[in-house]
Length: 265
Length: 375
Image (cartoon, rainbow over all chains, first blue to last red; front, side):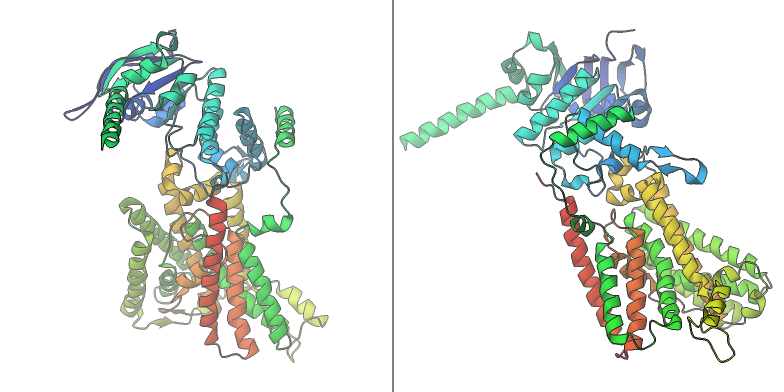
């Protein structure tokens, strides 16, 4: 068996005449956080959807646990242990922590027409799952509408882990969060990694990605700028390589120009 | 496993400084039934004070408003589950008329046994419910519009078909067919007759001059209401399917993403609503011994009002069956109580409108409390 749980070999994905991804190579290892960096339109979404089984690669090979696979649907990928937490989280705010945790995969007891949702046990498991991620749920029957965005993100992650994910794909988990909440989510990511999961973290915030990542893949305009181990690159290198780096330099220069003009006026 | 779970829970709870004890009454305030429960208590207090000696709370008076409440309760239970799943059915009232005709015309004019006609009506109604649901799910149109169309289609069909087959809009004479039937008494009969004879003998309730009790028994519609309430409430709160109902109404996209069969849940609930409308229709047909093409007019709105008073959100995802039943009880008590107090019954509608508005405002407030993040 290969050292990597997921390996993409020269994967491309076309939509009609549009080349969304071209010749992407990527390796994901258990117990590692793999950061996928890139600006808007770089192909991050297409890449994770390919990993998650939404799109099949147009060209190239997708290896999972050493074998070439073609996932027919996201459910197919999920059954193999690839869980994706999208930005909308697939949570229902009006429902309780427990009901969300088990939504669609309810824990039941009893048989036949007396088969029922084992809420007491489910409460305990949900609370435990959250506690493992470092979140103390005050009351598992509270509606998650009362929880913060960071806590909800953690719930979605804890749920994926509970249901046997080996690879966790997180789509911009810190995008809408404040500094403190982002830190909490990143802690949860670290916990997932410590449990031996492979985490694929999508972000365009290098400052969130750098402290936690073991490996980076940079995307730009549908192509990979390469994968790097953290030991090989500095935070500045990464920032530089992202399309944003160059643009930000230009912005800084422009702002300097403005302030000089202001000063002379 | 459970030992370690508990150990961690205790530890987690001990070190969480954010827990504060919430008084029991405050917890109650956050339950969907709270509004309707306090409303029901208020209404009872009001009528005990104003109509306490009018016979409203004598045996026959009680049966009177309990029956009216139960009739509404039956369809409110169907409307409630559907509303929690995020959909409406405005065709409930028309379905009552249509189902009534579906079970009387075959029996009276075509010589079918009553039980077969009843089963035919249930199957027919549930098929129309399926159609409602299928159109809503497949087109993605608001159920408000789709079922509004069925409100007119079914009412029109009821009148047109009953004229076509029988040349009249009220079909009577069901009694003589239903008397010896095995299925009809489940809808039109009364329950616990022996108990009431005994109660009359003991002098607990009044009796007629010939010694028969003033109340023959509990109408079957009350039994149906209690039974449906118990079963639906259990399904909603304690089964996977119940969890799906909440999920579908709360956010159908999220539900779909985690593998909840959203379309099946919705279609099955449209069928259940049609089922409850048919129960209502059957109870009326076998109580009065007739079906009329105008039965059930405006009942869809009464059902929705009861559900909303019961604390369900119009937008779905929140509510309980018990709440809907309490809403129906308030409705029945006020409708009948106004008659007992001697107030002009025109005021009933004014009261109803005010009650509805108050309930919606209250529910809105609760929704804000439940869905807004506290950081």
